[in-house]
Image: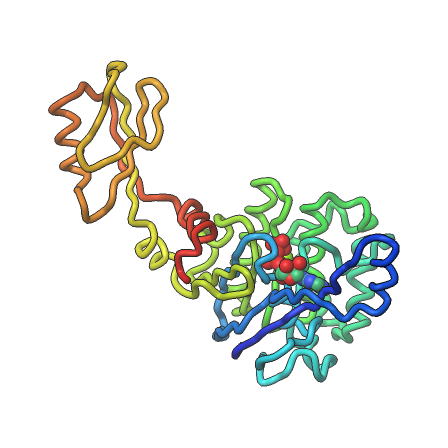
Length: 326
Ligand SMILES: Nc1ncnc2c1ncn2[C@@H]1O[C@H](COP(=O)(O)OP(=O)(O)OP(=O)(O)O)[C@@H](O)[C@H]1O
Ligand SMILES: [Mg+2]
């Protein structure tokens, strides 16, 4: 459905000279800094997939989404979505896709939600019957009724996001691009948006690509995840495989029955200690959890023990920090 080959977007930023002479020099400026926002990226997305696109601030996520939605023209590379080139043949293309940019709304600030949605219906020539059917379905699942007559400017962030997602889907697009659909939302509002994303993907077969800073969005929704940093795609694959490959570290949490001065364990290191509670890290493959527990119970009196895998969040943080996949 989507095929991206060697896709790049570079931004030229004029170097700024300071001072009086600098201002004059700026007039004739030919010096640029080149920002490689997206750099030689390759991927394919099949119809029906729901995948996450993650990376730290400035990694290139929004730039990729803007190219996929046809808002930006790539510097180089190829991009086909449903056999169409997104920035050509706009009218035909926008009929096939829906897009939500969490950081800004596509609705009219001063209009009540319902009027904004009806205006979009006319702009995108959505037939009345389709509009009504979709609208009635979405208003119920997204619980829009309470604020349909409220001007968009007065909506809470969570309400605005729900209205925007509804707006993006009124014309039955096959593909939905979501750029940070849960940004700034509380836990309950996030969960509501996630439920809807899952619903639209499962019930309607809509292909969804979503960017997020919240790894739990990806953990709860996506099998596949792509990680981008400094414009380069660092990882593309299964979330479980990512855990296996980079989450070699295991965590042993021990609640001691006494306050021991020294609590070394062979094969594990103390990562954190607060009074009776100690967190050890150990490598899978170097030592087993049961060997460690054996050591513990031979040397100390223990109240409780828990073994955990490293959280996906900390694995991904490590990948950002160390760019392990280079
Ligand atoms: N219109 C533009 N002109 C110049 N530079 C740009 C432009 N748009 C993006 N950039 C630069 O491209 C890089 C990638 O930006 P992008 O918005 O794609 O990141 P992002 O992954 O979406 O980050 P965030 O998580 O903060 O939204 C950044 O260095 C950014 O400053
Ligand atoms: Mg962004």
